[in-house]
Length: 166
Image (cartoon, rainbow, N blue to C red; front, side, top):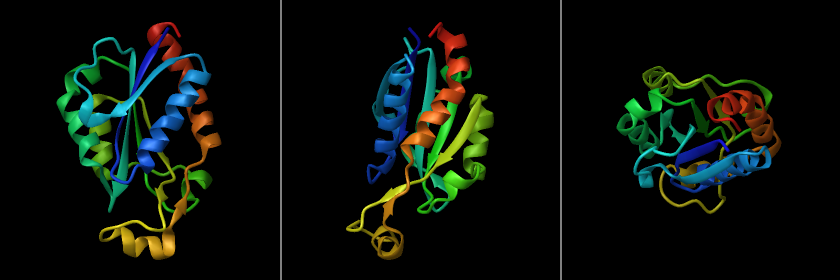
């Protein structure tokens, strides 16, 4: 069975929840998925593919996701890899493809990722800290779309199957 690591960088747990949705969609599609914070991943031994998710803050990918990609560049180049961004606090990610930020585009090139997708983000109305609390006044909500996540996982499934016999 193809074993997929879903590693993520998340501050307010919206991207953690998105990673769990990806993991659930992978399991429902017949894959073995391990979902964990990027900062906690020791090595990539035993994984047939990797999905790295990072929250976007001011067009910057979460530092734990960036560090994960840099730390594991050599291993990632030998595996099928997809990068996922989480962030828009509106429905834009469900109505059109959103290109990766320049920073994420460089990481895609660095590890020769097979693809990238941006999903909507999530921000609690009671978010603390600046600028989140200010943004929450007008942008609070959950813009993650589980159906979009399932469709995306289904779209990469043929490549996953080819990578590990899933």
